[in-house]
Image (cartoon, rainbow over all chains, first blue to last red):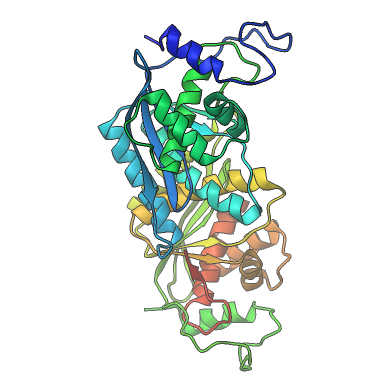
Length: 202
Length: 202
């Protein structure tokens, strides 16, 4: 069971890329995209505030099963934060078995030190998720914003509001959790269709 | 029980910094260095070849209890490598309970992407080691080479040979494992003495 045609159309409408979904893209390859799945764990790792969200691709609209932010105070040593990220994500997957994980791919970092620290947070998260047996896919950040808000430069607050709308949540999730749910929503939108840049397994 | 005075002097002789150990350094702070410990896990994480080494600071010379390299073929997805790094280091710590972990600190990376991938390997390693309850300390890479070979620009093969000499191993460890043992040796040399840049807990 995949996502409903209605959801699919809705997500596709939000893709404001030069290519329209009803026009064949001459640059598109014919390789099949990733098969649709039902329960997706989206993650947005960072040392002090890792967002996570479990999304179920249900009818009539995708449902945010659970979501949150793993907060690590500035007073904590880096290794304690990494341990905490691994621990919480392990708990999340025990409580909400997901079939696949989606994470942002290549991203912007201000400098090597920032990239290293962001990488450490990602490594702690990915090792745990891989150990739980989930395949992990990367989606470029701009593509996530495109899929959810309609343009690649969207602000965090705009993403959070659209995540609320798309999943019919009664509250706006906090920005990090919203980003994680947005990644999962983008994965649902990307999977099961042809794409020039399908989610890449990592 | 710490390292022997003889070992201590030997390691100190190899420090070719402008500051001599028998001359007070006007820039040195008076804060106490890290307390000496007996069993140290040194690690040199990278996605495809993470070196590790368990060092015991015994008399008459430090002993390499166990060491190795976690190899991940280029065909493996990144997440599989990260899972493997976490898994093997978990096994190592079960087989060889260490009291403290030493890792290289700030390092050179060619670009953001490289830093991110190295960071991921470090994150998988550090989360596992922190979960095992070990405090983790960073030592600058140049300081490791200084402590082992006598100058900061030493080649990997020179480090491996000195590691063999210092630990009286019958074979030269492979370069990644040797780097990990070098980090552990440098930690032993640094701990228990006053320093302008003692190993930093992370």
